[in-house]
Each structure stands twice: as structure tokens, then as C-alpha cells.
Length: 246
Image (cartoon, rainbow, N blue to C red):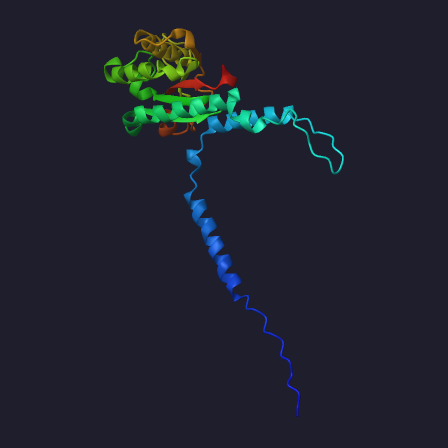
């Protein structure tokens, strides 16, 4: 009687791996599409980076021999205390201030009278110069902008901003000024910043929290080669300063 041959079990199919790999790739593409880099709060990110640098510099590598347990040391409470670092608290405060500003000035943002952003300096509220000033002038269009300035003054008097500092920066395009009132764009940009501060102070803000600067056309947002770029470059920025830029 012939012996039956023992057949080796068939190897499991690997065809599913191709389908699985395709699914993972599609999921990755889906989440990449959802990611919006414009939502990144750069001010808060800068604060976190500063905090991590502080922590890194404070770490001293412990010397241990094999088989021994580490005893509690300088880093024992690090996990509990890192969120209380001043720089992180400042980042949270700036993030809250930006959200409040976006909500409060939504109508002005939608009508392109104000833009709100954040960078390494802090939260930046940009006033469109063409709305607030006539071209080549530092006199405010107060009839058009009174309500906006009132809202700005109330915002800067918020209790959550009482310990913050602010800077008002004037900017121009590259077109040379004409007339005898301003010798150059330097004087025009600085005077516009000063004018905005005076009106905010009249409406109740504390001048001691503010500083002013005039940058002429040295810090453009866009190229001055086009009319649209020049319009964006003519602006007054009011900045809620990060602690590192006081």
C-alpha cells in the first residue's frame, strides 16, 4: 500500500498587503489635505521653542551604573512644572488675545480695513493706511474710522492685556512724498504711528504701555512694483508684543 505524501501547508497570500498599503497612503494624503499651515499660531510656537531651549539648557545628564534605579532629582517635577513656565504662559496669553481680536474685528477684517496675524514679534493688527489716511498725509480720516479706533481702544484696555506692551509701527510704500510737510517717508510713517497713538490715548488707552516706530518703506509686505503691493505696504501695525520684544 502506497504511503500518502505529507503536503506542506500553502503559504498565506500576501495580496492584502498591497490594498493595505494603498489605504494607508490615501489616509496620509487625506490628513495632509486637512492640514492648514495658516492656522499655526507662530507666536505660541515661538514661545514653545524658547521654553524647550530653556529646559534643554537646564538638563544635566545623570551618571548611573548598570542595574541601579535613578533617584529623584532636578527633573522629578519637570512634567508638572513645564506648563507653568513664563514663556509658555505668555504664548497662551498671546493666543487668547489673537482669538479675541479675530472675533471682535471680524467685520473690519471681512471689509479689508484690518488684517490680523502673528509673527515672532507677537500679534499684529494691521490698519489699512488707505482707509485711515489720505495718500501722503498723516491726518486720520476720523469720520470713517472713529468706531474702529474706539473698538481698538477698548480691546487694548482689556484686563487680560493690562500687563502687556504694544508697539505702533508706521509703514509706507516706496513712492517719494511730495510737499513740504514731510521731508521723506520716514517722517510720514512715524507721524502716522504717533497720530494713531494720540487718538487711542484720547479714547482711554494707557500711553505708558505703548511705543512707536516709523519704518518708511524698509519693511514691505509685498513688492512695490504693483499698485496692489503698494496698497498693502501702506499700513500701520499695532503689535501686542511678545515678552522677548519689549
